[in-house]
Length: 368
Image (cartoon, rainbow, N blue to C red; front, top):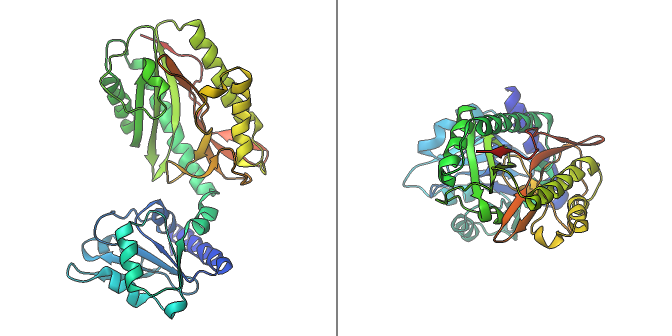
């Protein structure tokens, strides 16, 4: 078995260990980041069912459409592969492979389409159906050294694209879409698959999940860029700002507050700290500066194969930080009708604190 195969075999064994703790007989996983994590297989999500079945004991299986089966040839040492043709029912095939009778407890990953789940429930007379999230989250929240290295590479390439973008791009008089295309091109040239990109100028920067549009960037206003790219399925996520021409005193003040909040998280994170306290590190800085009501989202979310995954850095989440957890550090202040400021880095929890995987300049950047 290859080194990669051993990694996936070990992950499946860990799933089975968690299943035994929770009295679960089968875990079903359909195309998603969960499937990539467990099998290294980026399956095509469509009306044709692909399903990985993991029993609590024994060898896993996968049900796959015939026209995609050859993509799994190098996984035959990991699991049994069951191919279905266009005139067969993949749901009936899954039911035939499941053993245990009416006492079965089956956990299904959260990305499984409702149509597939309803069909499976009609065909398999199980005692209990539940989410597989509580099983899979325990594995995926803590990244191993290989995963962290992939995230490190994704973040480094993203930083490099940003630095080149700032040095070579003209902003004033161009639309958000136009400058966004320039950044998209540079990310692609670095070898990244662009996962998302927001370019929000002027008052649009006060909308945290703004959709890039045709607004023309003006002299004397900021532009917020929130973007990320995938490297071998693992994604970066960073937010940086530029300001076209000299910033106002108000912008400089707000920017400094957000930067201090961002740094407070990096410097304050410790293993064992509840996730909600990470949010508090940034929120206290912004609240004490008088802008607490304008910080309208959590300070961060987990990051890895998914752009948003557990753990979430938000009030009420008492999950303790563990070495190897990765999450965004993205405080923001949003002044509706004026501008918004957000600064975001990807952090990884270390033995004695946290490391930022993003190192592009966080200083105020003045452009033309």
